[in-house]
Image 1 (cartoon, one colour):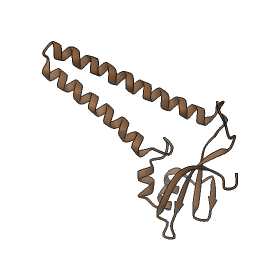
Image 2: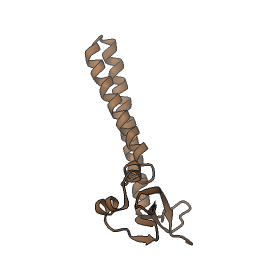
Image 3: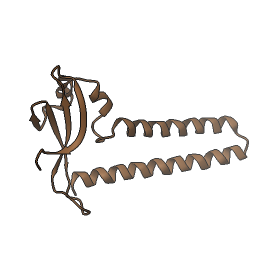
Length: 137
């Protein structure tokens, strides 16, 4: 199983788990409100909102790849990134590339290694991040 397929199954599994938990909490809220247990309902609603907001926050901050926090990387410099993630697998001038997966999936695979790409400016500040393949591939 390729890393991309594992990542896809991981994301689907976590999403389904969150949806099931969210639905369970909603059913619990309805039952508690019918029994007029307002304080317990408020606690369950708060837990539900915390779960939902944490899920949304993770999705917003890890848009490109689940192991890399895009927002934090965009606010840091290249030295901090090298300290946290190690030396890049590929480096082209002002571009650093960290290997993330090879697409060998069953539906329209490109069989190319995909990289988490980081472009930085002359001062070493990160300008842009994206998921891509090697230039010319």
